[in-house]
Length: 129
Image 1 (tube, rainbow, N blue to C red):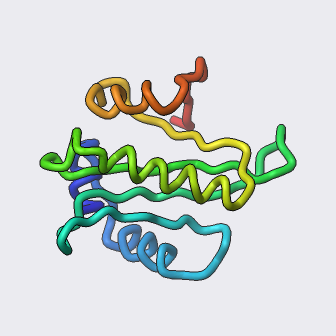
Image 2 (cartoon, rainbow, N blue to C red):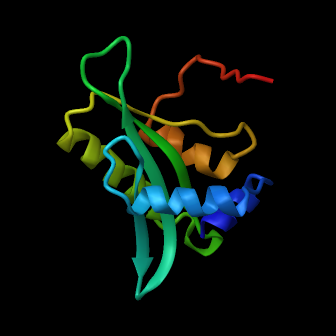
């Protein structure tokens, strides 16, 4: 399913990154990320990866929701909302004061959900070129 997520964003990762990502998911380092999956009758419908990290403006760690993906047939059924809520619940459990995420401007379907359950910020993302 993660490969489907990467394909949605028209990208790929090397086999080494793929293996490392899943090793981290299955490891016990608290600095690595975690995931939730949604399934129905044994069929995977969605996934989310998230991690907690320090923040210079807060004492507590904050939560970054790194990846969220639902299979096309599950979109609009509440799977995405449930996965985000699971991350919200885990953030609350760990006393993280905020959960944040990024999406691409063209991701209109997901943004309809995000606009209902989150608040768009004025920040613009830059990265090293």
